[in-house]
Image (cartoon, rainbow, N blue to C red; front, side, top):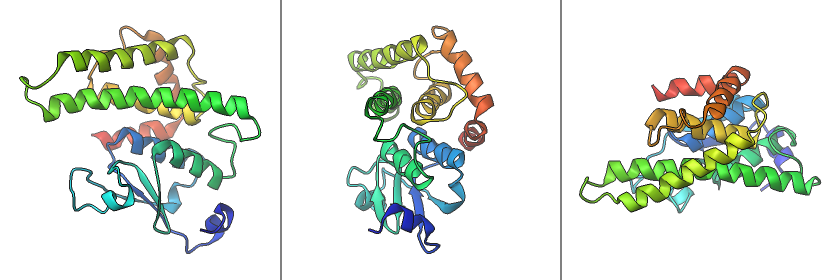
Length: 216
Protein backbone atom coordinates (compact mmCIF):
# COMPACT_ATOMS: atom_id res chain seq x y z
CA UNK A 1 0.00 0.00 0.00
CA UNK A 2 1.13 3.56 -0.70
CA UNK A 3 1.96 5.85 2.18
CA UNK A 4 -1.06 7.27 3.98
CA UNK A 5 -0.32 10.81 2.79
CA UNK A 6 -0.27 9.75 -0.86
CA UNK A 7 -3.41 7.70 -0.42
CA UNK A 8 -5.24 10.62 1.14
CA UNK A 9 -4.15 12.97 -1.63
CA UNK A 10 -5.23 10.54 -4.33
CA UNK A 11 -8.86 11.32 -5.29
CA UNK A 12 -9.28 7.74 -6.48
CA UNK A 13 -8.73 6.38 -2.96
CA UNK A 14 -11.88 4.83 -1.51
CA UNK A 15 -12.68 4.58 2.20
CA UNK A 16 -15.55 2.32 3.20
CA UNK A 17 -16.63 1.81 6.81
CA UNK A 18 -18.33 -1.54 7.38
CA UNK A 19 -20.59 -1.04 10.38
CA UNK A 20 -24.15 -0.60 11.52
CA UNK A 21 -25.33 2.83 12.59
CA UNK A 22 -26.18 1.47 16.03
CA UNK A 23 -22.79 -0.11 16.81
CA UNK A 24 -21.13 1.84 19.66
CA UNK A 25 -17.72 1.03 18.20
CA UNK A 26 -18.83 2.11 14.75
CA UNK A 27 -20.15 5.28 16.37
CA UNK A 28 -16.65 5.97 17.68
CA UNK A 29 -15.30 5.91 14.13
CA UNK A 30 -18.10 8.10 12.79
CA UNK A 31 -17.66 10.69 15.55
CA UNK A 32 -13.91 10.75 14.98
CA UNK A 33 -14.36 11.18 11.24
CA UNK A 34 -16.68 14.16 11.80
CA UNK A 35 -14.38 15.72 14.39
CA UNK A 36 -11.40 15.39 12.05
CA UNK A 37 -13.33 16.64 9.04
CA UNK A 38 -12.79 13.50 6.97
CA UNK A 39 -16.32 12.09 7.09
CA UNK A 40 -17.10 13.29 3.56
CA UNK A 41 -14.50 10.85 2.23
CA UNK A 42 -16.00 7.80 3.99
CA UNK A 43 -18.87 5.68 2.71
CA UNK A 44 -20.86 3.75 5.33
CA UNK A 45 -21.59 0.18 4.20
CA UNK A 46 -23.98 -1.62 6.59
CA UNK A 47 -22.72 -4.96 7.90
CA UNK A 48 -24.42 -7.92 9.56
CA UNK A 49 -21.97 -9.95 11.68
CA UNK A 50 -24.62 -12.64 12.20
CA UNK A 51 -24.90 -13.31 8.45
CA UNK A 52 -22.22 -15.84 7.44
CA UNK A 53 -22.56 -14.64 3.85
CA UNK A 54 -21.71 -11.03 4.73
CA UNK A 55 -18.31 -10.05 3.22
CA UNK A 56 -17.41 -8.66 6.64
CA UNK A 57 -16.25 -12.15 7.64
CA UNK A 58 -13.66 -12.08 4.88
CA UNK A 59 -12.66 -8.50 5.59
CA UNK A 60 -12.26 -9.12 9.31
CA UNK A 61 -11.92 -12.84 10.10
CA UNK A 62 -13.33 -12.10 13.58
CA UNK A 63 -16.55 -10.89 11.95
CA UNK A 64 -16.55 -7.76 14.10
CA UNK A 65 -17.42 -4.15 13.37
CA UNK A 66 -16.26 -1.61 12.51
CA UNK A 67 -13.90 -2.44 9.69
CA UNK A 68 -12.43 0.31 7.51
CA UNK A 69 -11.54 -0.58 3.94
CA UNK A 70 -8.98 1.62 2.21
CA UNK A 71 -8.98 0.67 -1.44
CA UNK A 72 -10.27 -2.70 -0.27
CA UNK A 73 -7.57 -3.28 2.37
CA UNK A 74 -9.16 -3.88 5.80
CA UNK A 75 -8.19 -2.17 9.06
CA UNK A 76 -9.75 -3.00 12.42
CA UNK A 77 -10.69 -2.59 15.32
CA UNK A 78 -12.14 0.80 16.29
CA UNK A 79 -8.99 1.85 18.15
CA UNK A 80 -6.85 1.17 15.09
CA UNK A 81 -9.36 2.97 12.87
CA UNK A 82 -9.30 6.09 15.06
CA UNK A 83 -5.50 6.14 15.00
CA UNK A 84 -5.56 5.72 11.23
CA UNK A 85 -8.09 8.53 10.77
CA UNK A 86 -5.98 10.74 13.01
CA UNK A 87 -2.95 10.11 10.80
CA UNK A 88 -4.98 10.83 7.66
CA UNK A 89 -5.97 14.17 9.17
CA UNK A 90 -2.37 15.10 9.95
CA UNK A 91 -1.80 13.35 13.29
CA UNK A 92 -1.70 14.46 16.91
CA UNK A 93 -5.36 15.42 17.25
CA UNK A 94 -6.92 12.28 18.74
CA UNK A 95 -3.88 11.04 20.64
CA UNK A 96 -0.30 12.14 21.34
CA UNK A 97 2.23 11.32 18.62
CA UNK A 98 4.68 8.42 18.95
CA UNK A 99 7.42 10.89 19.92
CA UNK A 100 5.52 11.48 23.20
CA UNK A 101 5.63 7.84 24.23
CA UNK A 102 4.38 7.98 27.83
CA UNK A 103 1.41 10.34 27.26
CA UNK A 104 0.48 8.25 24.22
CA UNK A 105 0.58 5.01 26.19
CA UNK A 106 -1.49 6.56 28.97
CA UNK A 107 -4.09 7.68 26.44
CA UNK A 108 -4.17 4.26 24.80
CA UNK A 109 -4.61 2.58 28.21
CA UNK A 110 -7.55 4.80 29.14
CA UNK A 111 -9.07 4.34 25.70
CA UNK A 112 -8.90 0.57 26.19
CA UNK A 113 -10.65 0.99 29.53
CA UNK A 114 -13.50 2.85 27.84
CA UNK A 115 -13.71 0.13 25.19
CA UNK A 116 -13.74 -2.53 27.91
CA UNK A 117 -16.79 -0.91 29.49
CA UNK A 118 -18.56 -1.05 26.15
CA UNK A 119 -17.52 -4.65 25.50
CA UNK A 120 -18.79 -5.80 28.92
CA UNK A 121 -22.07 -3.93 28.41
CA UNK A 122 -22.50 -5.51 24.98
CA UNK A 123 -22.00 -8.98 26.45
CA UNK A 124 -24.61 -8.24 29.11
CA UNK A 125 -27.08 -7.26 26.40
CA UNK A 126 -26.23 -10.35 24.35
CA UNK A 127 -26.76 -12.58 27.38
CA UNK A 128 -30.35 -11.44 27.48
CA UNK A 129 -30.81 -11.41 23.71
CA UNK A 130 -29.39 -14.79 22.77
CA UNK A 131 -30.11 -16.89 25.86
CA UNK A 132 -33.38 -17.89 27.45
CA UNK A 133 -33.94 -16.86 31.09
CA UNK A 134 -33.12 -20.45 32.05
CA UNK A 135 -29.80 -20.32 30.19
CA UNK A 136 -28.67 -16.91 31.42
CA UNK A 137 -25.92 -16.97 34.03
CA UNK A 138 -26.25 -14.60 36.99
CA UNK A 139 -22.61 -15.29 37.86
CA UNK A 140 -21.50 -14.20 34.39
CA UNK A 141 -23.75 -11.13 34.43
CA UNK A 142 -22.40 -10.09 37.86
CA UNK A 143 -18.85 -10.50 36.52
CA UNK A 144 -19.62 -8.26 33.55
CA UNK A 145 -21.46 -5.74 35.70
CA UNK A 146 -18.42 -5.48 37.94
CA UNK A 147 -16.25 -4.60 34.95
CA UNK A 148 -18.65 -1.86 33.87
CA UNK A 149 -19.02 -0.35 37.34
CA UNK A 150 -15.29 -0.45 38.16
CA UNK A 151 -14.49 1.16 34.83
CA UNK A 152 -17.06 3.88 35.41
CA UNK A 153 -15.71 4.52 38.91
CA UNK A 154 -12.20 4.96 37.52
CA UNK A 155 -13.42 7.54 35.02
CA UNK A 156 -15.58 9.22 37.68
CA UNK A 157 -12.41 9.86 39.67
CA UNK A 158 -10.39 11.07 36.66
CA UNK A 159 -12.56 11.97 33.66
CA UNK A 160 -11.01 13.19 30.41
CA UNK A 161 -11.41 16.77 29.22
CA UNK A 162 -15.09 17.11 28.27
CA UNK A 163 -14.30 19.94 25.89
CA UNK A 164 -11.86 17.97 23.78
CA UNK A 165 -12.69 15.11 21.43
CA UNK A 166 -9.86 12.60 21.51
CA UNK A 167 -9.36 8.84 21.63
CA UNK A 168 -10.33 8.62 25.31
CA UNK A 169 -13.26 11.03 25.43
CA UNK A 170 -14.86 9.68 22.25
CA UNK A 171 -14.60 6.11 23.53
CA UNK A 172 -16.01 7.04 26.95
CA UNK A 173 -18.88 9.03 25.45
CA UNK A 174 -19.84 6.12 23.20
CA UNK A 175 -19.68 3.73 26.15
CA UNK A 176 -22.00 5.95 28.20
CA UNK A 177 -24.26 6.47 25.22
CA UNK A 178 -24.58 2.71 24.81
CA UNK A 179 -25.35 2.30 28.52
CA UNK A 180 -28.09 4.92 28.18
CA UNK A 181 -29.54 3.27 25.09
CA UNK A 182 -29.51 -0.42 26.06
CA UNK A 183 -29.53 0.10 29.86
CA UNK A 184 -27.73 -3.08 30.98
CA UNK A 185 -26.93 -1.20 34.21
CA UNK A 186 -28.34 1.92 35.88
CA UNK A 187 -25.17 3.99 35.83
CA UNK A 188 -26.28 7.61 36.19
CA UNK A 189 -27.45 7.57 39.83
CA UNK A 190 -24.15 6.15 41.07
CA UNK A 191 -21.93 8.28 38.82
CA UNK A 192 -23.30 11.84 38.82
CA UNK A 193 -19.93 13.26 37.83
CA UNK A 194 -19.87 11.17 34.66
CA UNK A 195 -23.48 12.09 33.90
CA UNK A 196 -22.47 15.76 34.06
CA UNK A 197 -19.37 15.02 32.01
CA UNK A 198 -21.43 13.42 29.24
CA UNK A 199 -23.70 16.46 29.06
CA UNK A 200 -20.68 18.74 28.74
CA UNK A 201 -19.11 16.53 26.07
CA UNK A 202 -22.34 16.40 24.07
CA UNK A 203 -22.55 20.20 24.16
CA UNK A 204 -18.91 20.63 23.12
CA UNK A 205 -18.81 17.93 20.42
CA UNK A 206 -21.85 18.21 18.09
CA UNK A 207 -20.91 14.92 16.38
CA UNK A 208 -22.02 13.05 19.50
CA UNK A 209 -25.61 14.28 19.26
CA UNK A 210 -25.61 13.96 15.48
CA UNK A 211 -24.71 10.28 15.66
CA UNK A 212 -27.18 9.74 18.53
CA UNK A 213 -30.03 10.35 16.08
CA UNK A 214 -29.03 7.17 14.28
CA UNK A 215 -30.13 5.14 17.32
CA UNK A 216 -33.77 6.15 16.99
